[in-house]
Image 1 (tube, protein in one colour):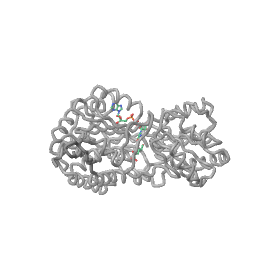
Image 2: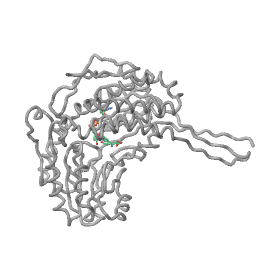
Image 3: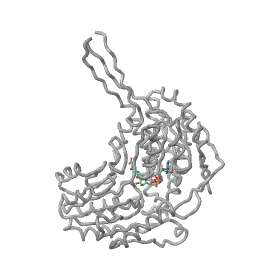
Image 4: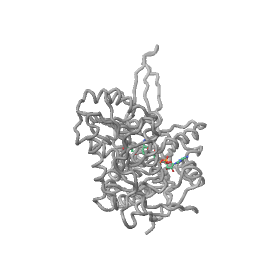
Length: 485
Ligand SMILES: NC(=O)c1ccc[n+]([C@@H]2O[C@H](COP(=O)([O-])OP(=O)(O)OC[C@H]3O[C@@H](n4cnc5c(N)ncnc54)[C@H](O)[C@@H]3O)[C@@H](O)[C@H]2O)c1
Ligand SMILES: O=C/C=C/C=C(\O)C(=O)O
């Protein structure tokens, strides 16, 4: 059955004249008809937010924390609905979405409920000729926040921004990716059920340019933009908000490195790199597409990693045994396959994969590709410099620690990196030297929501997570009081 996904504006589900089709990338079948918001509907959403703001920003942190906890509880109660919608939109295996995406949707609300309860400000006593002054900071909401998110971890990344924005007393106009509108629509139902005041959370569907995304960015009454997606989209958004001088927070692309030293626990490193290269069919911004391995274990490592890649089970996402889903769309598959072809032109050895699997039945209308490992490319190859965003990595040997750091840092991106070594002195030393916002040592994608999260270079601007989210989603106001003695 094909669902209808509507916009949610001022506490009501709103249709629009124009709709587009949301397809299941596992089999090419329609999932939903989605009501696309044009600039007029986005304007209605912004006005609804503006009207709701004065009352919402006056609520106490405790009241907002309680709303967030109720939202989390309903997501948990409706976990099966969220799981079905996420799997239909993305084709990701239930084994992944049930462990990663849906629990994090709820956890994001719980985490920011706790953080806003615990948050405080700065206070300074300042000596003055008259005696002393007291400086203290107030945390106030930005106002109407525009949220634009991608398709790879739809609920996780959408709620990662909605939760702190609401916690800080903002109202939001939020747009999920056109590829994955399902769980955001369910979230609007949750907001309705918990009785969030009308206009505080507004959902608009649509695309980027010429559609809802651009309309949010261009709207004169949006007070800040938080965006996760491709680096070049971030650059466009930055240009488009420049005249209005609004704050932006960007979580962008990556070309992340894994460094594996000969002293690493071999089996853990192989399993870790297999996960960091192939989880979610490689469609996690944190995935490692560049793997550098110390020469003495290079051959053995490549063989063991290839064995793990071949052991992945592409298949029906609803089958609990499936471990590899499709890519998000035909268009994205074309892009990934163009890199599979480019790698051959650039002289890569294809250790495993490199093509499209035959799975039988409807799945052959899906967007599957084989998990792929390359060796033999030069560091300057486009396949080692550009983000592919698929289940693929290149493995290259290195000889010294210095060389490993140099190779890891030879990238325009700087999001994440994973180091595998049993020498903790070296681990800490390299962690400090690597140009990336996130370094994992003997693990990958282990998240504590209090920590700063974000990228350097082309990978982003600003940090979210913990108090860093509170800092983006609020204006800090300093109040200076001359004390009479
Ligand atoms: N750093 C991180 O935390 C992080 C997390 C997840 C994904 N990513 C990156 O996201 C990318 C994959 O996601 P994607 O393909 O959905 O990214 P994308 O940039 O194509 O789209 C992201 C969102 O932006 C909207 N959009 C597109 N053009 C726009 C414009 N001109 N104005 C306003 N909105 C616009 C889209 O409709 C979508 O909602 C990868 O590059 C990945 O690395 C980064
Ligand atoms: O695809 C990118 C993954 C981003 C993950 C987070 O933003 C997170 O775990 O908070």
